[in-house]
Structure formats: structure tokens, C-alpha cells
Length: 342
Image (cartoon, rainbow, N blue to C red):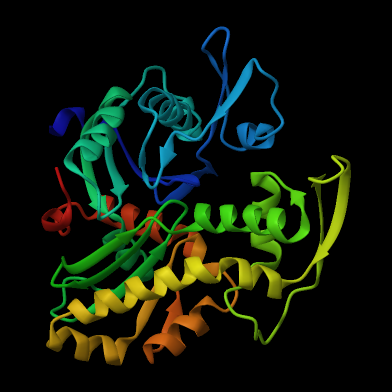
């Protein structure tokens, strides 16, 4: 090992359904949407990340935008491999190298993942020159990223709401005691908004517009302390076929997302009901931690708090909590050996 260590670069990757983040030398060097645009004629990848996401929903027949990850796992092996490859090539420090360095990687995976899906992640990383690939469960990485000492004999509950899955886990002694992975998260919220706009306003909007609505005025409850302004949304009228614009408020979005948030609430309750009593006592004192982009939905913490009667805290910079934790695990491989999957 020793002599070749300087040829090895260490990177931590959070392969998300919505965004991929990469940490190199303790800095987030890549933070872009997990999406690629491919030319159908030549099969070449034209754009990746932010550029490709600008094209989403605006392509002609020769260009296809692909989201290689679905529900937190790899759905399109080929596209995901090329995407990871391009992201790694875009890391500024690695661009200067003459040849491709061998990589030591720690990659995040959802906790409800199957062996086959795990192998897909591993193989795509090995193909981009990953010599040592370690996998870490997302709730674990989120807990480390929030700053919880997970090795203590103390229970902590993490709810990580990402793009494809919501991961709920109770962690103690560096292991997951009970967990639940639900496929209700950011993407489902976006689809709920599209469906709501079609049924209530006869307005057909695309994914990007729905995503924008979710970020600007998305809410989990109708009683907010600081309600956002109304928003004007443009799309296609389903009755006349003409482009039109409507005004919508956060209350409508709260209604649209209600069912999906209920499912997340139920899953949290179910996980709590499976928690051993000693750990439940700890959680009563420490509360529930929220991470992931979905936790930024206005009023979600309040709603979960009312449902569980527990304090609910949102991680600072929840979008990056998971990748930060992955980065910390990468730096202290020997300390976190027990929780990494080789």
C-alpha cells in the first residue's frame, strides 16, 4: 500500500436520485442534479448535471434526458456509470493529473437496498477506477453528518427524506437497530403537484415547473407562521390546448402533498413502535433528526412533531448532511470500519 498511496485519491459520493454530491479533500466539489442527456443517434452523452437538467422536458426526438437513478437505486446501469465518470472527471484537483488516479471511495446506499442493487452501485464505481469501494447506509451517513456520535450506547432517530426514498432509522452503538425505507420522497411530491394541477386547475405542467412550485411554495401544513407569497404558474390548458397561467397558494400545495406526507408519518410511527423500550426512552429525550432535501418542506418538522409528540430538529444544510457524513467516514476509515460495507 504505502508507496502507492500518493497515487490514490479519496472521494466520498452521495449518489442521490435527485442530486449527486462528491466530496474531495473535505470540500464539496460536485453538487449537481443526477441527470444525463444522451444523443439517440450516436448514443453519446451530450450533457450531464445542471446542463442536462436545463434540457429536461425541452428536448427533441434525437435527445433523451435520463435520470439513471430511481428510488435511490441504479435503474440505468450504463447511464449511471457514464454520469459518475463525468462527475469524477470534473473534480478540479483530478483534472490536473496526467493519468487517472486509483480511487478510494465511500458511497451512500439506501438502507432498504437489495444485494443485486448493491452490486450495481459497486460495479459502476469499480468501472470508473475505484480500487477500494466502501458502501455506507444513508441514515448512518446522515447521522454522522448531523454530528451525532453514533458509537455511543444511545438511541437516535434519523429521518432522511431524499429524492427517491425516505429512510427512517433508529441508530445505536454504530448500527441500525430498526429501519424502514419508503419510496415516498421528493419525486413523489413533485408528481403529486403535477397531478393536483391537472385535476384542480386543468393545467398541464412539467416536472421542472412542479419542482419549482415545491421549492418556492411547498408546505406540509396549512397553518404556517411565515407563509410564502402566492405564485403564478404557467403551463398548457388541458381544455383549450393554449398556454395559460394560474395563481396558486401554499395551502393548495399542502392539500396536494397531504396523502404522501401521511405515509411518511405512518412509517415514522411504525418504526417507533418497533423500537426497543430503552432506545425509545433515549429518543424521547433526544427527539427526531430530519435530513435530506425533503426535510426543507415548510412545516414538515411541526407536523411530525405534532404526530409523534417528540421534538423534531432539521439538520443544518440538510441537503449536504449525508455527503458530509460520508466524507467524515472516509477520513476516519479505521474508526468507522464496523459500519462500512466492503
